[in-house]
Length: 104
Image (cartoon, rainbow, N blue to C red; front, side, top):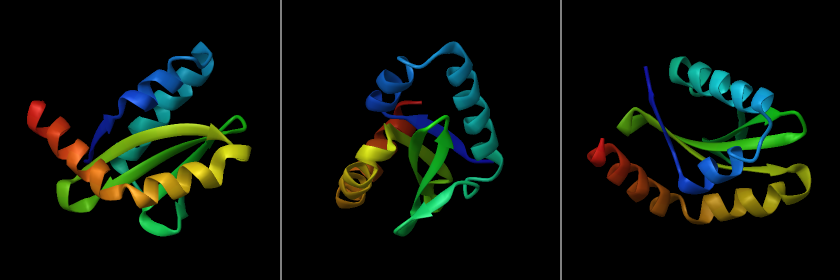
């Protein structure tokens, strides 16, 4: 099983969702623990997304750390901007995840 961690941005964005959508996010996270590659691949193997009622949930899978980092949500309009940002900052997200793992 993979461990799932969340960025502050992800927590802030999902905190604005309806209770129903928050429950769906939790189900998605549970699903990812068992199989981190269930979502759609975006440009690189480790960058993935899952759809949630017109929104997208973005996350990175780090096999070497046996962990997943939930990064952000967006609508279709902002999708490419978010994907490019995550891809360009993947090393910063790896460092962030290492810190989260160390703190837990």
